[in-house]
Length: 213
Image (cartoon, rainbow, N blue to C red; front, side, top):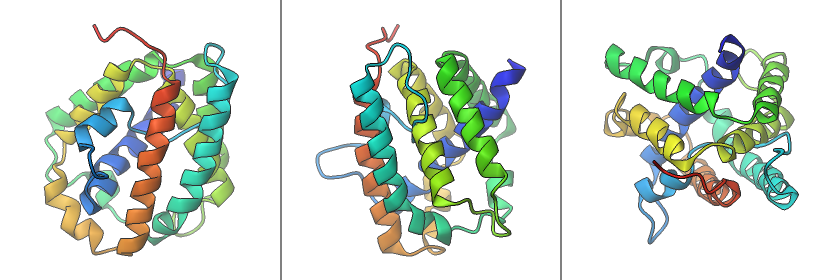
């Protein structure tokens, strides 16, 4: 389990960002509810081809990660990553935080091992390139998105939804949405959200038909 922690922590951070930042800025695309969209998959992803996943899906996830990264990078650069808000989770209930982390650990334990390894390596490389503002190069961001996409695609959709719902219960987006939106360019946030929504469809299509029970 100790070997899973670096990757799971990174996954938690991405899930939290997607849960608390992007949905807070803009509503889901017409005809889709937020719950439906994230039920299909929540995070961003891919750097290794899963042994059980078709190569065509792997290629699509990688391509989608490239598109997502290019579209959301301007938004990413506007975020103050040195802010304490990302480490403190203001007003969060510690018990609910632990419950959310537990769901993430369960999801992480179900992930394909090569995908986990690729995710860890992508994050390690990116950490080595973090600048004084907490930002990473676009290439590293793309690799991380690709890796996480494959990680998410390797687990049951129910586990993805469990993690999403658990973090939704940690900090309500209504409590941080207005504040977070005031810190970035609205157009960039919307572009990032649209790209993320497209990305989750690609990842969802690559997920295995695991039983929900």
